[in-house]
Image 1 (tube, rainbow, N blue to C red):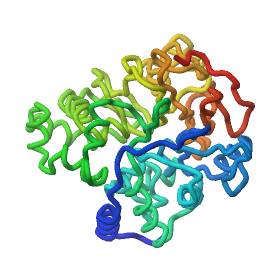
Image 2 (tube, rainbow, N blue to C red; image 1 turned 180 degrees about the vertical axis):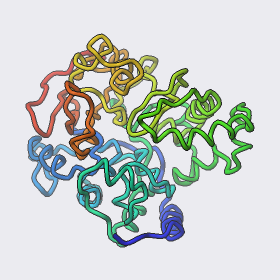
Image 3 (cartoon, rainbow, N blue to C red; image 1 turned 90 degrees about the horizontal axis):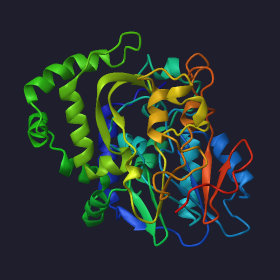
Image 4 (tube, rainbow, N blue to C red; image 1 turned 120 degrees about the horizontal axis):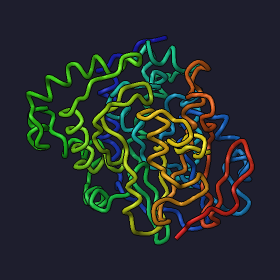
Length: 385
């Protein structure tokens, strides 16, 4: 594999962001739509889903339907470059729209992470990507440059009178900040987060000395699954408050709450957990991805054998009593991410026996149906307000 220098990628990202400064909140297509969950590089799954929903390979639908993607097109899966090529073509031809996910944002910011070695051209996380995921296609230099330019022109949210789409959380305050911003998403993120860590801590009312001391051990301990991590209250407070105050983070990663006892999820120890913001949401229907919603909640609920503090228990708590075919909160929000990002995990690593299957799904609107790439659709979802 060819190594790509970090400086080269930083220069590409900077050029992409400078060339493309989209409106961060854009109008959503009118007419019937199919809102697709986090694809995570699963090109075969995406093609199968499109075929099941009646789309031709060209992306044309006989009923003039169009596709909308909730972000996280890439990472973890077998063919992120192929997914990007397909989705970008559909967008350029006016047959699809897409919002920015946290995985695209990480690549724009030059942040190596779990599952994105396909982009960097070398094993940036050799103990993780090479041992965690099955074989995946690597991007060429041309594909890397094209990907960054594509990500830089994606909005953070799409809206029309009856429907909204965002990757993780619809927050009126965050949307207002994004709507008023005239630069790209990375520039808005930087606006809310000073480069200097001490200044960030001061802005978040976190002791910078205590944070720095905890963070040193946190960076060492968080990737060691066999050793439970000690509580990191200052790191947890920093992460919780940063997520709350940054418009870009709220829209792409959602609000978080600090936990007293760290838990292991998605290949690392976590000191914050996602919260069910949709319980307080009031507004038009909104569709999100991001949350790896269990397809069969009953089999992973805390009263069904999920160990406290595990990823299964956190997911069960997040979605509470809502089944996979139900609108969330007060019937105004729907999560369409059903864990397709797990599919390319090596056999030794998937969740415990009895965990829900990983599928790629799409919400059909205004039909109120849930379609899958490998099973029959749910023709009438429950609880839509």
